[in-house]
Amino acid sequence: MEPFFRPWLMLCVAAFAAMAATTAPAHASGGVTGVAVSTCVRPDAKGLTAPALFRNPGEFNCSRKQIDFGRGDYWVLSGPLDKIPDLTRRTRVRIASVWQDSITLYALYPDGRILTLPLTEKDIGRHVQLGAIVEWRLPHHAQPPVRLLWHVRDSANLRGIVISPHLALPRESVRANLEMAAIYAAFGGLGLALLIYNLALWEALRHRFQLAYCAMVASLSLYALSSSGALNWLFPDLLNNDRMRVNYAMLATATLTAMLFARTFFEPEVTRGWTGRIVTAASALLLTTACLFVLFAPWHIQLFDRLYSWSFFGMLIAIVPIIVRARKQRSPYLWLFALAWSVPVAFACLRLAMNTLFVQWNFWVDNSTILSMSFEAIMSSAAIAYRIRVLSKERDEARTREMATRMLADTDPLTGLLNRRAFLSRIMQSEGKQMLLLADIDHFKQVNETLGHDGGDEVLRLFARALRDTTPANALIARLGGEEFAIVVPCNTGIDPDRLLARLRAARMPFDMTVTTSIGCCSGPLIGETDWKRLYRMADRALFAAKAAGRDRVRHAERIAEAA
Image 1 (tube, rainbow, N blue to C red):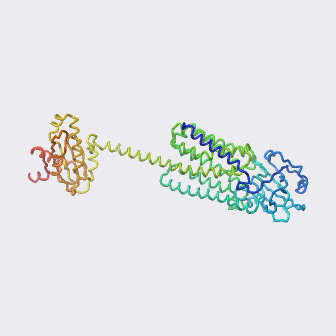
Image 2 (cartoon, one colour):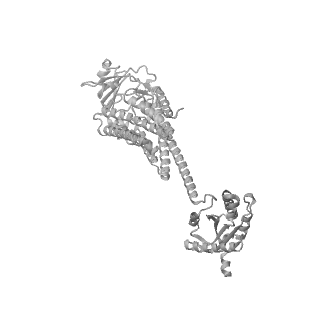
Image 3 (cartoon, rainbow, N blue to C red):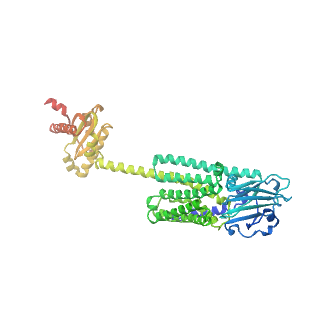
C-alpha cells in the first residue's frame, strides 16, 4: 500500500469503529443504566405549578427537540410510567449532568400525592454520581409513581434540558458506579504509571517531547477527575457548574498539551514554517474560546460553547499539515503518530458532531475522551520508546562514525598502525620507565626495485602485522615515516629486542623474500616532549650503530654509552 494512505486509512478505520460504538443501546451504557423515560417539554411561565401541569399533560410539546427551545426555565414531563417493569423497586431517577442553576423533581403517585425533591446548584454537586450523572433516590411506597416532572431554572440547554432520564434499581445504580469507578481508576492508574515512567526517562534523557507528554497525561488525569464527577465527591461543596468549568478547562489543556507533544515529537522540520503557524493559530483559538467559556459563562454561554466546540475542529484540521509534512519529510515516526491519534481523532469528530447537534447525545461518546486518550497515551508512550530507540541507534551510529573518523585520523592508512601525530599524543604522560625501540627495514630501496612499489607496500603491511603479532598488547606501535617504525612499551613488560628481531626476520614476505631489520633501543622516563626528544636521539643513535655494524641486529643506547 502506498505509504501516504496508511495514516488516513487508520483514521478512517477508527472513525467507523467510533460510529459503531455510538449505536450501543442505552441500557448498556454504564452511566445511564436502567429503563429510559420519554419526556415532553414546555417553557416556564408565571403561575405554573406542578399539580396543574400533572393534570394538563397536553400542554407539553413531545415532538420538538429539547435543544430547539434555547436557554431559559422549563418544565419537563415524563411519559406514563405504568408500563415499566418492576417499577415498585425502581427508586433511582438518573439524568445526565448539564449546566443549570437548579432543578426540582416532582413524583406523582396514584393517590394524587406529589413528592418534591429540589436540588440547588450546590445540591446538584452532592448528588452527582460517577459518569457525571445526577441521581435522586425515591422513597419506597406501596404504589410506585405514575409520572415524573422536572422544573429546571436557567438551563443553558447546550445539549438538552433533561438528558437521558432513566429509572433504575438500587443495584443498577451501585453497579453503574462500580463500572465507572473501574474505568476511571484504571485510567488513573495508567496515567500515574505513564507519568512516573516518562518523568524517570526525562530525568535521564532530557528530551522536550517527554515533558510535553507528561503534561498531556497530567491534564488528562485532571480532566478525568472532573468529567467523571469524582471532583464533586472530593469537594462536596463545589458547585456543579464550576465543576463543568474545570471540565472545559482541562479538556482544552489536555488537547493543547497533546498538540504540543505532537509538535515536539516530530523532527523540527515537520512543524516549521506554515505548518507551525497553523498549529499555533489553532491552539491560540482553542485557548481563547476556553478562557471565554470558563471566565464568562453563563453570559453568552451558548455562543461560547459553540465557539469552543468548533475550535476543536480547528485543532483537528491542524493535524492534517503535520501528517502531510511528516510524510514529505519521510519521518520514521509518522505511522506511530497516525496509529496513536486515530482513535482520539475519530471520537473527537463524533463529539464535535454531538456538540454541534449533528449526532444525538450518547453517554459513551460524551465520555469517549477518557477511553480514546487512554489508547492515545499508551500508543504515545510506545512511540516515545520507539523514538528513544531510534535516537539511541542514531547516537550509537554517530559514535561509531566519530570513532572511525578519529581512528582514520590517528592511523597510518597503509599499515593500520598509529601515525606519528597520534603516537606522540599517546606516549606523553606515560607512567614509569619506558622502552623506545626504533625499527628500520634494511635495504628497503632494493625491495622496491625488486618488487615494485606495490610489492614494497605489501612488505610494509606484512611487517606492520608482524610487529603487532610479536609485541605485547600494551605496546604503542607507529609508522614514523617510510620504512621506519617505533615501539614504546613499559620497561617492566619484559620485551626482548633480540627475540623481537628474530621473529621479524622469520616473518613471511612476498615471494618468500627475506627482509631484515635494524633496531635501536633505549629506556627512560617519557613525561613530556623533552623526554621524547632525548629518547628519540638516543634510540636513533643506537639504530645508526646497528646499521653501521652490518644491519640485522639490535643496539642498546645505554650499552653504547657505557662502552664509550
